[in-house]
Image: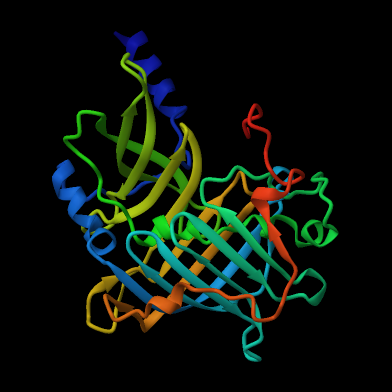
Length: 322
């Protein structure tokens, strides 16, 4: 008995407090149907007009732990279902137009207006497979090379972030899975790490007549925030993660409807990301949008580049992107 007590006393002397990531408390449990109600601000809206600040990031050097972040620009964003978008980007303070772009869901047009040496009028197809522009890209157009990964921006990349499609539950060709995931993330204090819990709703699409399926979308809901709001949307193309969209904050549109104050859209394979920052009262939902808002003419007589006719910019059919 004395020996057991001695071992116990010695063991307790070795116990010490260690620093571990803080486990954040979670909100009450939610069903899949309840989580889908969080999508209504994005699935029920038909038209959006907003003035926002845009911050672009060039991800070409992300592999060595660096991003190139451009100064914030003023943006006018107009969207209309099913897939029309117009985005005009201006330099802050002086109002000089940098770029203007539209997409009707099938074709896109991008007017590059600044810098002067890179001015172009780009035309392409939303489903077109084009080479991404990076440091090793060989093209017949040096101005596209100078533009870097920002030449990969397509207006339709932004559409799905705002005009979200309903989550299809009940379709015989698609199934969903609801699970829970804990992620190690930075905390609010310096050098702090926390464990945040998410519900993850995954939509899968059947491939052929067999048992194979591939991921179409993933929706992440933050259980550590009141109401378990939507925090992230992952969009897949041919089973490959193509777009990650993060949603933060809450504000009100002009008619008082809830909206987010920050949306971050990341296209890792296309080597760019853009943060869209909204302001209170600068968002109009379901207002009147004239049809000409989605027409972009080449009034400046810029050099036209039809990407579908450029062999040096079309990705070979046999080579998939990583």
